[in-house]
Image 1 (cartoon, rainbow over the protein chains, first blue to last red):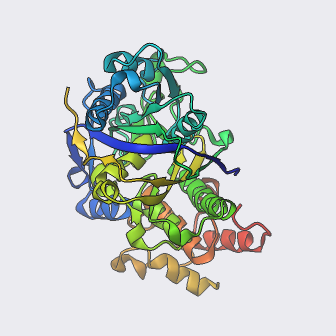
Image 2: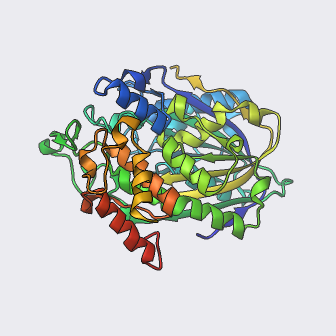
Length: 353
Length: 83
């Protein structure tokens, strides 16, 4: 854990877009009423948004970016940097940032970058954009965090189906030479656990073959193929409980921030059980920890901006110091401590073409 | 921590009608309502109560609640309990 900081950069707005289709965990067909009640109370997830097969992560991200530009009244020509985070790109190549640059109508001089990251991705993306912009060479940037992670889950994988959800978000970031606030970040990765959350086939290591499509059973009621998302929930919990709170404690200690001066704590929305335990390890007051799990589930890299938009009233009028923390695939875990000035932050909107 | 207290902590994580049937020699996977989700609940409970983290491998090595208790005792005596 090595904190680093940037000056002269501000977050100006956040827009989050979700598909209109809602799946309710209360309606899960394979569980008894008792099991459904236990699942909902433990995960904290009541409903999820599901993108139909013809709506991709770039569609959701593009919609969010269009709304963001409109609300901020930014000119397209002013956007000099576009960073896209996803693990569900439209194509193996080119990346979604390139597709969105064209569809949004950004100039060819826009620096377009793609980050393959999951639940820690928003912090990775923010740190990269803040770093590039602090140089003064880029004045306006859009950071897109968008995933249709439900498209990767086996239709018979009843351990993952109740958790995951789809969303696309866009965050506006601007160079502000007169702003002296430090924005702090720390990022960690331990790739030795790469196969705790992964999709085994379809990449260069294991190209897709006919056997990749064959489902094998996970337990007595679930199955998945090698092209589906695999997740070892027990190891994810072990990782989350072991590293996340520890990183945050070290982070705020090393950057010299008093925990009590943080207005809101926004964690990746993994599930209620894990998130509440992390908050409890940090002795955080309930009213300062923001959630969106019940309504939007785990939207992979998009959960932090989705949670900001879910609580948009808190960010529209007042300045807030926030502690953001994402953790997941990799393992990767990352935190940020920023001051967010009153910003354009709209309620979550439903996707439109 | 003693076995009685530990058993009580585990029992409390299950519905009231199941609790009395859970003993130290009970096989975890045989408890009514046991699931991968319930395993996560137990993991968080043990972390909360004893500051010990249970890995997937630990759970694979465990059959009864007594086995789980033994693993926690062993981990408690290590210098780095969160390993």
